[in-house]
Length: 287
Image (cartoon, rainbow, N blue to C red; front, top):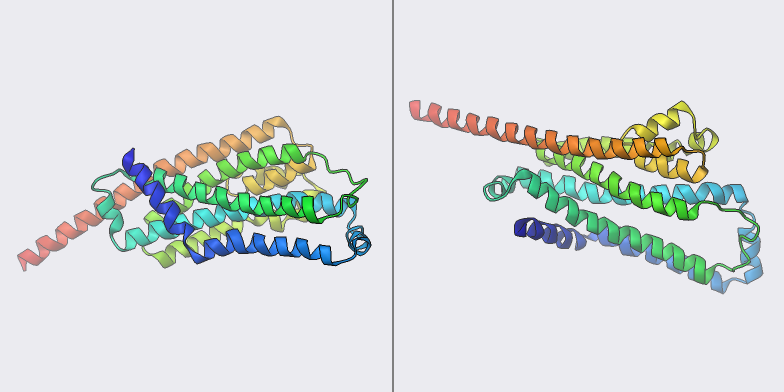
């Protein structure tokens, strides 16, 4: 357990210091706060006039999309760090050294928890900046008469899908990083996964206009698209409890399957390489 905690701390601190992480986690929310504070320099009646141009339908559409994009990007950012880390460690043979004292599953566990905490810090910073802007800088009269149901429900399920979605993507991308031949190959495959993960956001018009269509339900059950799709659909309403249960179970079962398959394939890959090395040594001796 001590080794898992050590890996957890190492992953958290190493990636916390990365420039791209600081940019996404602190600079962007900071700029959003500055943009909100700038409304104090504008006459409040002008601010109200500008914001009143946004209809209830616009805001109703923007809220679930914002939640979906924030959680989707956070999940993929943390999982992307895990993908790169696993691929680099395999490429420079550090993974082989680690495996002499700890199992692959424990390495994966430490990395997933460490980077999961990193993602939690990121999403907290983004949501806190949004809350501060709306509480301090937006006039309270703005939005009067606009009905925004389900914010509490959205936040609850967004947290659930952040957790389950992160577990799935972290396990999937970690497995890709461990099995890829090099970092470049891992990043190419990871980019393809990212495209599919954000597909619901790009298909948002379809989800809003037909949130209970066959295509929307299919994306809700498919693990790669389920987190973002379900966040949007739950806010829009009309999603049955059974659908939510199926999508969550699908994510959890897929996560377990990915971890088991990745561990098996990684062991097989390592065994094959060891056999190749032994055969090469035997061939050199024969010569």
